[in-house]
Image 1 (cartoon, rainbow, N blue to C red):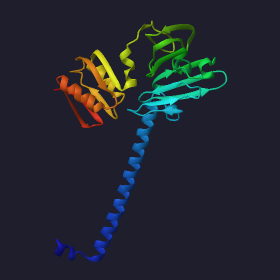
Image 2: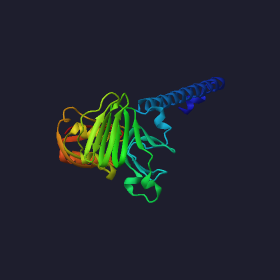
Image 3: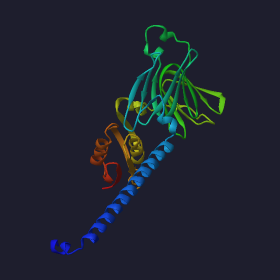
Image 4: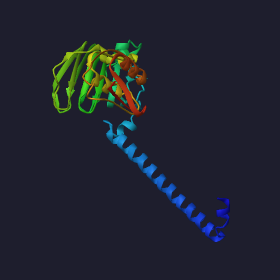
Length: 275
């Protein structure tokens, strides 16, 4: 090879190398453009694809996938944000308003917490607003989840009042142990709350006779990347407790207990399929 290269005329070799360098620079510029465009497209898709849109990214408080966060508000109330959640907080002389852009929160008012001082007798209404309506807290502890299609409210203690955004005259009062789903047009009939749905506060997903497909869909909220379930195993009935902050461990528990296995290109693109 060395002898062959030595026989190449110098001016030919030089022009070939210059062309090669130029082609390399063009290729690298093309890759940079594609990478930049791909990143921008991915970011745009992420922003547009979230229920809260771009407002979720500039919210007062937010969590990413698989994150949780506790926030003590100026009046002494407590908010706990679940995975993929964003909220804006507005507290003034006339009201205390929490705007849930997307995700899920647990709210505990200062009055309920027994915060000493004036906060305990604060007369300003404490409200949570979602794209579908508003929830008025009546000295309480409750959860609110908004997934774009609807809002689900579960009352843990005391009571709340629920109003749909396009039917403000219809008010539904929920007592402790009740939950209700509503959209902007209607409020469904109150039901008994499933206490297991609030166990995310303690880092667990507790299910009783759920479809495996539904369990995986819930775990997917905490999983970085894509997590799916093959329709062939989606109807397997599942009961148990799974750690939401470690979805790999949760999947390992499922694999040990049921005839399924994990497959995927990387840990960010995972599916449960028949074993």
